Length: 116
Image (cartoon, rainbow, N blue to C red; front, side, top):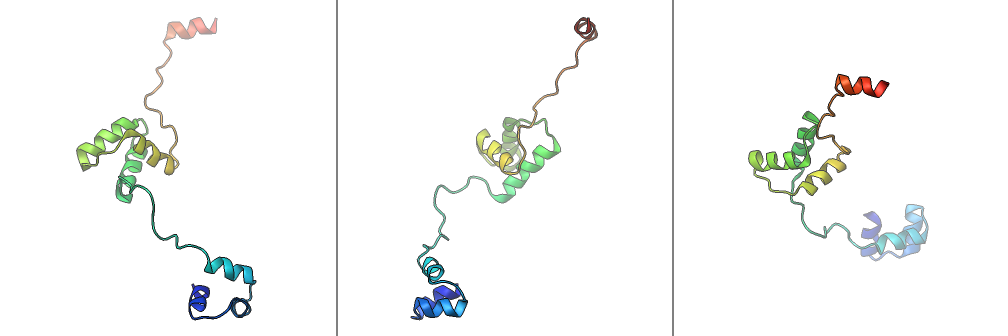
């Protein structure tokens, strides 16, 4: 920020390099970097609050599928998103592949047949 201000005030690169104890190439790269503050692309469908709600639902009940979370979001909070959006938000929160159902237990006759 100070380097950019110095360039706007008319100071040359060697002077700024000595002042900040760095090379001229660093001054040049700093002053020629485009402003990246403007966001590009499509705006997000969910807010950070909605994302926290999705993560909280999944942590509370890991057996919920993304479709279940999606329908609950729509019913309770009025947020209409796709199941892929829910999956993406969960992946971003490092919640990968939540198991939707319990595996059924092996009946006794199958267990004894398997052990023979």
